Length: 367
Ligand SMILES: *Cc1c(COP(=O)(O)O)cnc(C)c1O
View 1 (tube, rainbow, N blue to C red):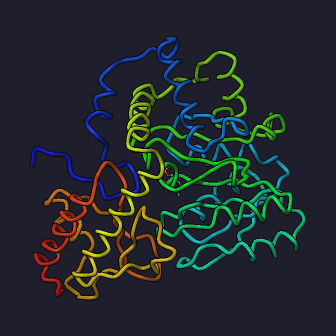
View 2: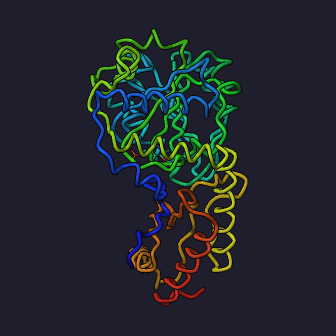
View 3: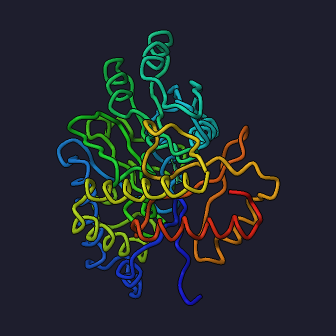
């Protein structure tokens, strides 16, 4: 087929032609035209969270995890103590990277099927005064569960602890408003719900904590405070910027605005998610999560129990029909995941369901 497959994954995502075309130019990193693109993009990112008064946003080269690592390194002092709220795979990654950077880290474990509990967090913070920061994943992409950002932020604020949010898979689609929710750092990336291409992340940092961040990072490249200071002074990135990724993201954000911003994107993804779940139910495939806690970002489905089912064959048969699926990330149950995000609508979701139906039929899996 002379067409790119539709990516039903949590990034990279299917992008528009307009976004792809933005990458057909070369830009000099010192050039004022490119630096104007960076400045405009930073301002537009702050618009999305209504954060101009309270926050700055610092872009960083690399995939999303680079920015999570940078946020922890920059915000948490070397003798800080981080509590990671754990209800899935990305939480475990955050715990691991925190430890590897030499920060003391503790896990507060929850079931993968449920959002993290603000009251359990409250109890834990009351019991352990040494905890300086909390790390929370907004949408845990491992399962697709949405965690209660506003409630967790309120508990942290009340208890006087810092909050670092990994909002990688929710930013731009699910509401995040700095006027309602206090956080020290919030991390997102180019290749997720903003529908850019992968290659850079960005971190919102609360202005009130900025000065205290100087010198925290044990890494030169991951130092967001330094990146921020340099960018403010020179308008340039500290090290070689991902120029093509940047201009593609600027074009993607322009389309985000034209579409109607975060509420419009949420409406489209919600419709995608509904179409997907309804279609899959008709095939006898059930979501892993209950509907109340399911974010309209990525859906985990129980795999068919028929012995004829095999994810690799299912993947190949769906790919042959133009759709890229995602494996499950749960250790206890056999699952697979289907993303609802990217420059796609309910037509593509209906076609995806049809492709999966045909794939299962081809494998001889009973419906
Ligand atoms: C995508 C994602 C990341 C970053 O993953 P990378 O592979 O480094 O881009 C981090 N956290 C969550 C919740 C994600 O969905």
